[in-house]
Length: 95
Image 1: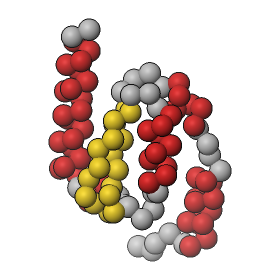
Image 2: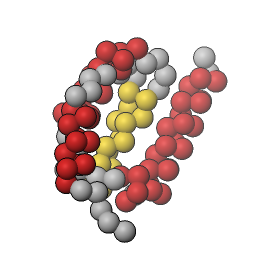
Image 3: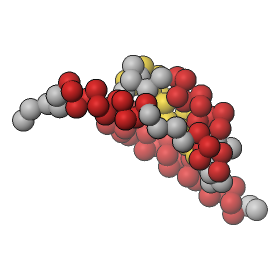
Image 4: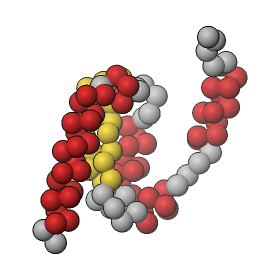
């Protein structure tokens, strides 16, 4: 199996950088869980801040891990997600 070529990676990054959905973040009305890998060298802290500043009710959980957080810390992420969902469902049932 061969890896992805450098040219394909460059094109993918250029496409990602061209997207700005900041306005769409402001329209989201459901709880958002933002999982951030503390040692991520690909996704910047600035990108996380943009989400937190523009998405009402976003919750940040930082996990000591590198990029590809869900793959490298799957069990920890699953526990965080389950706890978040339980808390949100509890909040909904109390309304």
